[in-house]
Amino acid sequence: MENQKLPNATAVLVLGILSILTCCCYGLFGLVLGIVGLILTNKDLIIYNQAPEKFVNYQTLNIGKILCIIGIVLSAIAILYFVWIIKMIGLDALQDPALMQEKLKNFQNLGK
Image (tube, rainbow, N blue to C red; front, side, top):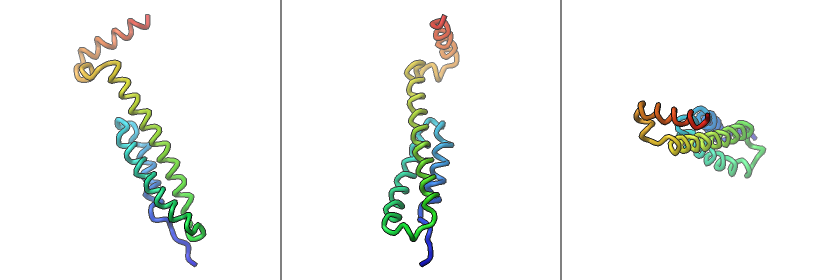
C-alpha cells in the first residue's frame, strides 16, 4: 500500500505561518487565517484517524495546527491591545495629530 499525503496539511502549515505574520494587522487577518487553518486541520484529522498508517505527513499537519493556535492567540492579544488603545486615547485622537499630542502629554503628566 502506497503512503499518501493528507490533502490540507501544507495549506494548514501555510495558514499557520501567515496567521502569525499577519497578527499585527489589527489582529483580524491573523485571527481569520488561524481559524480557517484549524477548520482544515479538523477535516484532515478525521481522515487521518480512519487509517493513520496510510498517511506520511501528519507531522506537517500537527506543526500547522500549533502555528494556527499561536497565530490565534497573538491575534487575540493584538485585538485586545488595539481596543485598549482606542478606549484610552479615543478615535478622535487617532485621527487628529494635535489632539494626540495633547492626550500623550496628559498621560505623561499623570505619571509624575
